[in-house]
Image (cartoon, rainbow, N blue to C red; front, side, top):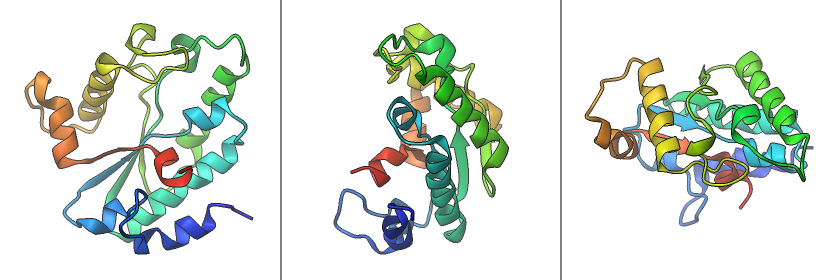
Length: 173
């Protein structure tokens, strides 16, 4: 049984909660960017379960006429330093490949070459400003979106796109 099924089934009805359904709150969104799974792969969540959760968000987007964009994230072999969790880079890389191979109804953007180690703010690559900026630039370029001044890219994404829905915020709080 999927322990997140209740939340997936009821997400369109959630109100006045930190897990509020952002998509239904304002139907003027064109895109929903879904970026998640790294923390799950660091922990004990199985890759297939994390992929199913992301597919669930994609399905909600499609039901609300919002184009779902799934972002693969950073290259774990280049960006993380996890001697206490040596299997993490491979688990995350396998998860990323599963996203590329199995997500349906969404565009999956391979962003594994977007950032390097110095763009990470910690050992497991929670990105710093330069990492987020490079990730935004990569997504904008791969989607052939209108380019704005470089200093305004992150602000533009925040104001005009439903950016980086980090699914841990929806499913793990």
